[in-house]
Amino acid sequence: GGQSGHVSRDESAFSKQKNSGMRKTIAKRLSEAKQTIPHFYLSVECELDKMMDVRAQMNGAAPADKESGKPHYKISVNDLVIKATGLALRDKPEANASWYDDAIVHYSNVDVSVAVATEGGLITPIVRNADQKSLAQISTEMKSLAAKARANKLQPEEYQGGGFSISNLGMYGIKT
Image 1 (cartoon, rainbow, N blue to C red):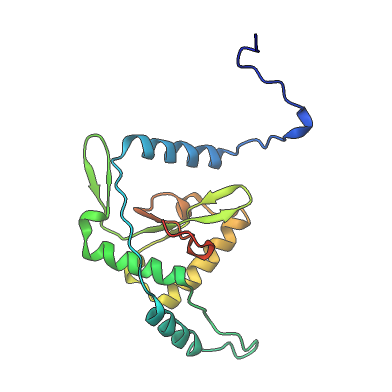
Image 2: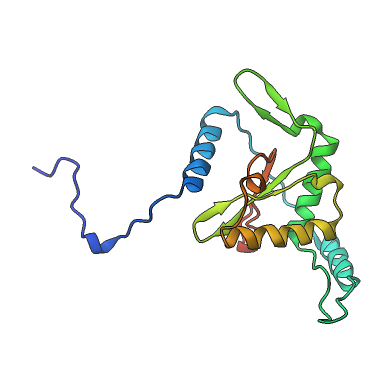
């Protein structure tokens, strides 16, 4: 007979990294959300050639810093997705909501969480009132939030409480 489900492992074949309190909270909330909130999935393919042309024009017109000569901002595809999501949630407020057992909570503000990869895993800093900000503001804020996330310096209010999350993996060829 074989062994009863126990597999002996060489201790040098793996390492353990203790979970931080933040990691545990994020994992718990994601697990709870997947188990308790009704989910539905939609996908669509879009041709973005004109959007990319407009993005290039906006970036080309960005004012430059007098000392360094670098543009004050560089709008990314993610920035455009954040803004589009913010406008869509503003225009369709029934989607700017969360499910709870006793009620659906409709949010007054359009706060978009954006997945950022860090050494410790994904975290979702929030662009508050994304529908009201310019692309330049979103770009500047997102760069700051991503840098703070990678340096493990986000404050809880910067990653807790978003009403909608975006995770963009298009740069890796992921479509759905």
